[in-house]
Image (cartoon, rainbow, N blue to C red; front, side, top):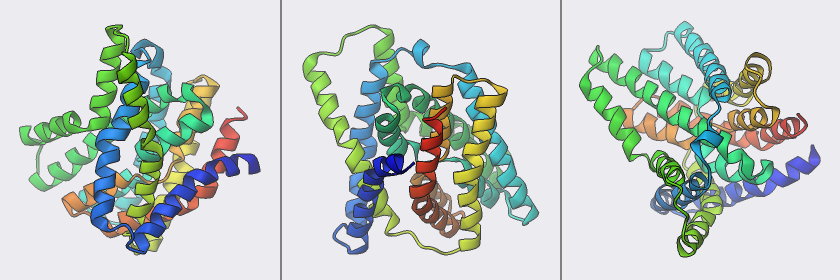
Length: 309
C-alpha cells in the first residue's frame, strides 16, 4: 500500500505544484486556460493518437468490459439521479449532479497515470472508458439539459451532440489512430519521434493544469460536494468492480484498469459544462476540489487492490 502511495504521490505533487502556481497568481487564470488548451488539443491528442495507431481495434474492443463499465456507471448515475429527485432538483441540476457522480478525470489524469502505474497494456481499457464517457454520458447530459429547457427533443439537440463529438480532439485522435492502425500504415520514424516528444508533454502539462484550475474552484455547497465525492470515489469503482468481476467476468487485469479509472476524481470538463449551461457551477466546483483532494488517498488504495487481483 505504501509503495503504491509513493508511486502515485509524484502525480499528485504535480497537481499540487499547479495549485500553488494558480493560488499565488504565478499562473493566471488566462495562462491556465491556454495551458489546458495546449494539453487538450495537442499533447494529449498526440499521446492518444500514438497509442491508438499502435493498436488494432480488434485488440482493444472487449464487449464484456464495455458492458461492465456501462452497467456500473449507469447504476451509480441512477442512484445520484434518484437522490436528486428526492431532493426536488429539476432535470438540469439533477443531470449535472449525476454527471459529477460518474465522470472521472480519465483524459488528463487517468491516461498518463494509469498507463505508467499499470503498464502500457492499460491504454486499451482506458480508451474504451473514455469512449463510453464521451459518447454516452456526455451526450446524455446535453439531451437532458437541452430537452428539459426546450420541452422536447429536436434536430438542434442531435446536431449539437454530433458536432460536440466531432470537435472533441480526444475522440478525433483515437479514431484517426485506429484508422491508421487498420490501414496497416507504418508510422515513419520522424513522425513517431514527433508524437513521442509532443505526447510526452501531456503528463506534466495535464497534471499541472489540473492543479492550476483547482486554484479557482470554490468550496461552497460542501454537503452536496461530500455526497458527490462519495459517489465518485467510492460507489462508482465499487459498482464497476461488481459488474466487471461478478456479473460480466472481465479479465482481471482489464477489470482492474476500469475499476481504477472509475476511482478517479470528478473531471474538470464537468465544470465547463456547468458554466456553459449555467447549471450548478458552485456545487460542481466544490465536488471537483473535494474529490481531487481525497483521491490522493483513495486512488492509492484502489490501485493497490486492483494490482493484487
